Amino acid sequence: MKLYSTNDTNNVVDLKTAVLKSLASDRGLYMPQFIPKLKESFFNTLDTQSFQEIAFQVSAALMENYISANDLMKVCRDTIQFTAPVKHITNNISTLELFHGPSLAFKDFGARYMASLMSHFNKGADKKLTILVATSGDTGGAVAAGFYKVPNVEVIILYPSGRVSPLQEKQLTALGENIEALEIDGSFDDCQSLVKSAFLDDDLNRVYALSSANSINIARLIPQSFYYFEAFKQLPKNKPIVFCVPSGNFGNLTAGLIAKKMGLPVHQFIAATNLNNVVPQYLKSGKFLPMESIATISNAMDVGNPSNFQRMLKLYQDDWNALTQDVVGYFCDDQTTRSTMLKTYTNHRYVLDPHGAIGFKAAEDYLAHHPNTHVCFLETAHPSKFLDVVENTIKSKIKVPQRLARLENEKKVATQLDKNFGNFKSFLLTRK
Image 1 (cartoon, rainbow, N blue to C red):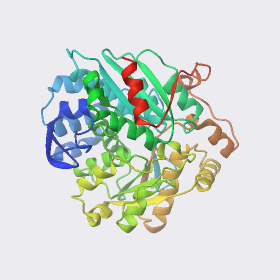
Image 2: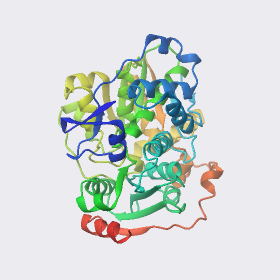
Image 3: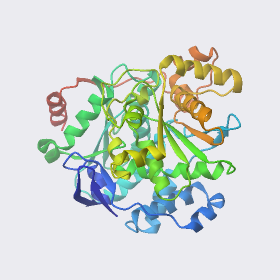
Image 4: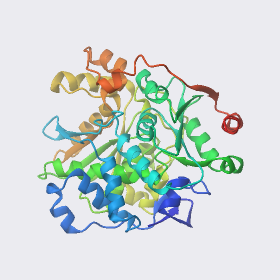
């Protein structure tokens, strides 16, 4: 398997390099040179395949025998240990629940797959692998859970101060062991900028073997494609299927587009955002205008300059017309998000988290113009991770799963830093 940088198609590496380095030397993101089409027999038997079998078949096609079948099956078994069920809310709207893993967020799939893959590639390495990860909410918790006590790996999580929910913060800061948290006085984009700058710093790379667990790492995108196949298996086939993806850094949507390129018969994708709507605006105007991120109640989507947008463009050879055939954009504000949560709970007794509410609203808006389709939106996190927002909105108490509730009384341990790269670099060098 060969991958190229989105900034230079001649900058080509193998899968191990792309996974362990994360970011290309020219600051581009790695993309597969070739997206294979899955065989017709795969789709003909999709309904009979287990989630683990689907994961293995998709991985094997993408990796082109780069990893032995036995080792790849172990990675898939280690990753897919929980379900991704489809729940029907209305006749034409379903949701794919991706919050049944250890951190109650969709990123559990990517984090666990990445941890297993990195552990495979890092066997026998002289230097401990240091994972730098920026989070706007869910990534950090999933990465912390996925890499917790993994041998010869340490994780440093950067998160924006005051911009994650209290229980999300405990998932980042209360584990200890090989997980360390940095509370940054800035936005998610500032955290992500620090991580990217660290990868390209010669001094840090002499001291550390650095990698990332953000969706800039291709090892996050590969497993995120699996659950589109798993969802399609469960959905009705009497109408064209549309996936609606609540989006921040756009890794999840990019993974869905990869699944479509591999042959999954998806009619269209909906890019659903909060007021950080640079991609919906691009889909409408053809102009990509990054912005300072705006804080919202759907905090995991508060990204003003999404990294994976470059991958989306490369999948369509930078052709706006081609991309907009497959992807349409919708966005809404906090007030609309809250009213959607309340209406959905009142009418259907289904509890949405703020991100899922944006997906549900976008699905409704899309169906107003495309009534003969079936929309499946991704419910990316358990509503209890946003307890105050959800309970205050729907005026009802919700049950907090025990694996999250137990963190409430755990001690937060985090180092506070500003967004200056020089200070971040000094911190990393002096901790060695």
